[in-house]
Amino acid sequence: MGIDPIILAPEGWHAALAALEWQMDLGVTEITGEDPIDRYALPDTLKPTAKAPAAAPAVAVPLDAATTARAAAAAAPTLDALRAALTAFEMCELKRGAKNTVFADGNPAARVLILGEAPGRDEDLEGRPFVGRAGQLLDRMFAAIGLSRTSADPASALYITNVLPWRPPQNRDPTPEEIAMMRPFVERHIELVDPAVIVVMGNAACQCLLGKQGILRMRGQWAESLGRPVLPMTHPAYLLRTPAAKREAWADLLALKGRL
Ligand code: URA
Image (cartoon, rainbow, N blue to C red; front, side, top):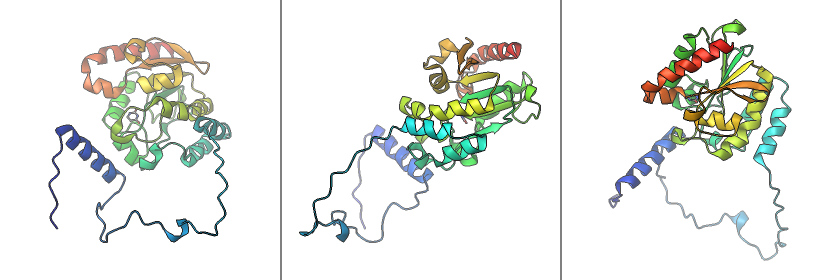
């Protein structure tokens, strides 16, 4: 069968390629059907019948996703229950495109909790936060001040989680709506882990806990959220792109070490 060539502007071509890659990420393996489909034909059950009584108007119950999230999170008495509640939460579209719900990694008894942004491709595949290149840099950064996610000793341990547990398409930034929707889970997560100090890495984490962005201005400035000290730091993915910023990140790590 011949197919007419479609001429696309360069940006249209890139968008089409990105959309195709995203569908492949979702597991789509075929883009054509064997048989023609009449998409205008209604199934019999949907065809109007003369006898059918007029349907009662649907009652629109506006379900506020953040309210639902808050109730689900508040009802979780343990981290395992919170993980289950998060995995069962269906109101965030990102979940449909994700392979895994990425909950957390590290030692829940740690004094330091790191809040990142959202899983990337590696994290989505593995189901653990910060396992890709940015995660390897994060491990090296914190190892330099004696902290590790594999430590059994709470004094030298880390606990790591993200604002969003599902990978956004093409690793785009989380939207303010997504951050607000998932915030109740983050708050409950922090309550249950009960860390002495929180490190927020990047803008999404600042937005979630401190209600504002501007990480390049905010980094290194201690703040407070949920009754705990919060240290904003630049995200390791930014440090990979901007090695000159590592110097400031090192100063922030030393400030954290001093605080601990
Ligand atoms: N970046 C994040 O913010 N979190 C991850 O888990 C991975 C990359």
